[in-house]
Image (cartoon, rainbow, N blue to C red):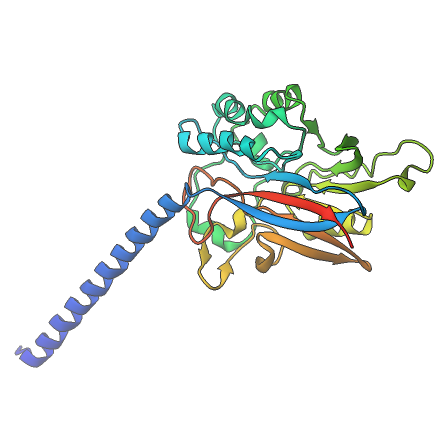
Length: 315
């Protein structure tokens, strides 16, 4: 059978075109992955200001840490964490997912030691209880993960003890008041909603007519599911602090996050925004997080961050 030379030529041209396209796609994929590996270590501090303090109060600075996902050997991350003490915050708030390896507790505590010199509060995330498991990184883009636990348990009790020995207050399904800079802060925290472990402890109660004195109600959570934001907003929180989303982790420049790994809208994946529920409004700061899962160690258009939130007196 005679084959038309023109048809052969067209097929060869198409094959060369497909090969070039495939090669270009592969090169772009490699370049993107290399950039993501680089960006995951480009740590930044996001500055925010919020006027919610009673009149006459001086500014109060909160350093919000979340999703460190520490792995032994992350020397650059450890050095950066230590350097944050130079900010001299009035309070450190840690919203969970500190670990990503069974041997991470000791080096993480060492990295955070300078920050343990400051008052602090904390709640856990799922990756404080369970080590991450290998999975297709693309599965992150399909929506919230369904994991309810994990085969490898992490030493959360020892990490919690280390935080407590440093003076940080555990808010896991509990509330507590602290006097900071001469003003009462009422904290209420929950265990990780991503694992459906939240139980509401309400706000701390003390003396009769305690609300007549200057105070601020602060809710601390790991995963900012809407049901939890609704609860604390309805219950009169003045500020909510959360993490978990990684800011989307892989974002599209000019568009933003593709997912939040919870039911939070993607445009709220990180930053300071108002949350409305039952006629009430509460400002919510969602941290874009500091780390990644060790099985998906890239960030794209979403640099790792700590948040320095300066509270000032309202009008």
